[in-house]
Image 1 (cartoon, rainbow, N blue to C red):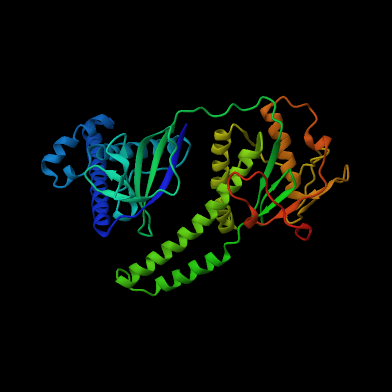
Image 2: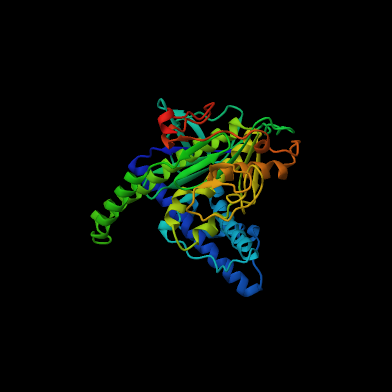
Amino acid sequence: MYYAYKYRLEPSDAQREELDRHRDICRQLYNHTRYRLNEYRENHGELPSMTTLRSELPDLKQWWDGLSDVYSKVLQTVVERLFNNLRSLSALKQNGYGVGQLKWKPPREFRSFTYNQSGFKLDKKGGQTVLSLSKLADIPIRLHREIPDDAALKQVTLKKEPTGEWFATFGVEVDRESPQKPDRPKSAVGIDVGILKYAHDTDGHAIESPDLSAERDRLEREQRKLSRKEHGSNNYEKQRRRVAECHADLKNKRRDFLHKLSNHYAREYDLVAVEDLDAKGLMELPSNSRNRAGAAWGTFLRMLEYKCEREGTHFVAVDPAGTTKECAACGVSTDTPLWVREHSCPSCGFTADRDWNAAWNLLSRGIRQLGAGRSESTPVETALPTGTHSVPAKRVLEAGSPTLKCEPSGER
């Protein structure tokens, strides 16, 4: 199994300059390799192989001052990065997207470089933990959680955030297999995501979206201040970092919420059924795109999927079409306007919150799609709950907590 562990680096001013120098050399090599790739294609009518361009690196060092200062494996990963980008463009083109060519990378768009397999290690020096990087430095690292003893460090990526902070992300391989998924899940949940209520599940929880209005207001204030600064001045650069810090604060708080919520569902259930959402397509709709972007549904579903795989939980993404209109009790569809938030079936009289009804439909479809050894009668048909509990986002517990706690009855 593969994991990623991310830690904050605490370099000195001299080490920051050296990190920036190595990063810029890698950026220049990326642009040079891109130029060589286009030149080779024009002369030979085809793209060169990655091995061909890698084999040119020793000759480049003969005339390129500074290239020898960077560890050889780092230079090889720069060439590999270019070919990975080419493969990504090809995949988009095969899926029908209009794509162009790889562009020249300016400094602000090339923020990371990678040590692969060798040239790095964690060490103890002077009573503190440091990341020893070949041909670079011993950089203090804030190791806020230990890497498992049975884990093998495969690579480390050093990245400079727009705030100016440096982070190290370790690629770790652990010699263990994912838990086996149960043939007959004992506990199952359907999850319908939204905006005002971030998630409705079939256990009766309606989890509210995190309130980030104060963070957004602060971001807007700092952006207005930035617009009044002279571009390129010292004051502009200071204010640009403040804006970047506001963006990072928003991102970190949102991802913290999503990590905790997805971790809860992955650990507490044997089967999780969700909507197979086209998050990119939803963003292209003409209205309310800001709230859709802030909800980060695609990120939540990706987190939930890999955590379910890690915990041995069935993850089923089902077609969401008609789930809000179809009655969870009898299956009759009712064409109700979107602004009507209560489902009331004219056929059987079943009444419930519209999103909660959709969650039960997702679970029923997920069980049928998985074929998980259940009977033909769905949980909805055998035992319908009586209501939902509103759970504020701040009450979503730490990762690994046994349950989602509900507020007192006044919050129902």
